[in-house]
Image (cartoon, rainbow, N blue to C red; front, side, top):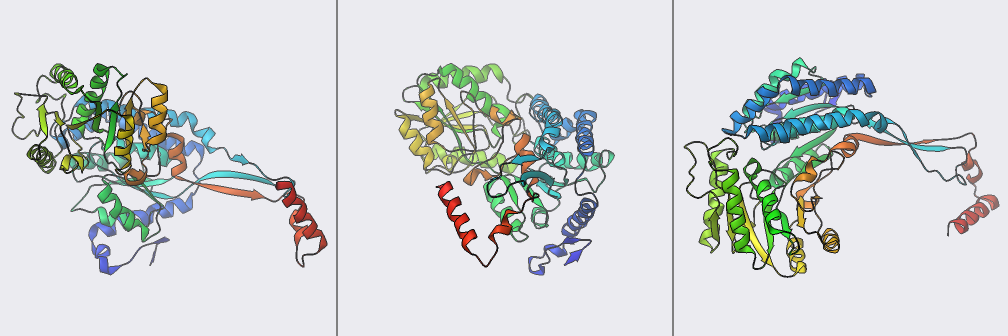
Length: 489
């Protein structure tokens, strides 16, 4: 049916149109689409104003935002929130403001002057309209606000649904947003009673989802009913491989830093690592010393809690299953016990893992690190390529030929060489998965493109060459076509 100029997918069999959440989402979407049609291409100045407003929302309320995330987690490292969320979004805004004028310029494209003399081709980037954003709980500030940087730069409006595990942050953003943006520009929603399906069923002009592959499939299926284009940022099992030439102490230092950050609850985290055969004992000893130095108290706020009891029990089940099937577990925080209710899960190495174990079948999303060994890099490639394509890949080697071998032989969403995760924080690099780890990109210029319609424009010049090729096709048309074909051969 038509409602205020927007098409609503009315399928009573789903039950969604009867829910209060569905009606709330539909009402907001209708309001935003009306505003979009009234001003379909915001000016450069308006887009800069939107980015400035987003920047002000963050700067004015930094402490409250950090406190809200800490409350949702129960214990979230405040430094990690400020560094990986607040700082990252502010950097993205600053860089986007510097580049936006260039991004908005029409792009001249090549034209065949023999066929179309005096004519021209160009591409212009225009707003899509209203973008729906579905946010996970692990980095809820960055993963709600960073997409908005590209969405506003491209001239769009946005509706953002937060995770059920981000209740305090959701309520804060719902309260704060109207102080900086009108509802027809931006609106946040808490997840009430699992309202995700009602949200993804809306006929957005684009739907942006970050989360698990399982939920991503459902989101994509729902969006398909409205032919809504989607960007899916998923996860998977991102591997690291340490080459014999790379100093093991550096590899341990960097891999353990990544695995402990946010207690491993990162979609691009190292999910398992390949070590040169025979280096297991040295790696273990290095890991023990590093963790003892960095985290002498598991209950300290520097070490983040697992988000909820269900996730904690899922990790415990993975660990128990691996041990039951013959894996050797090395607790890197021995003697440390999480305080009641804090859900602090110790960093743990797992050796002798097999593919039958849950820890090698599912994305871990926590501080468990399976360790595999190898002798031949080809074996590493064969193993990784036999699995679904990962979101990230982390080869540790100073050998340029080996770097190229891994880059050419292993396909992944992104790569950090000789470290982990850091490619995600580079704002001039696109971020996105491939295959089972997602589709589409954002960050920087690629984000601007994702949320724009790159509209091709052909402008007919003074001379119309097609007039020479009108039916009935006679001698001139055929001779001219023969000449052009010969010229292009």
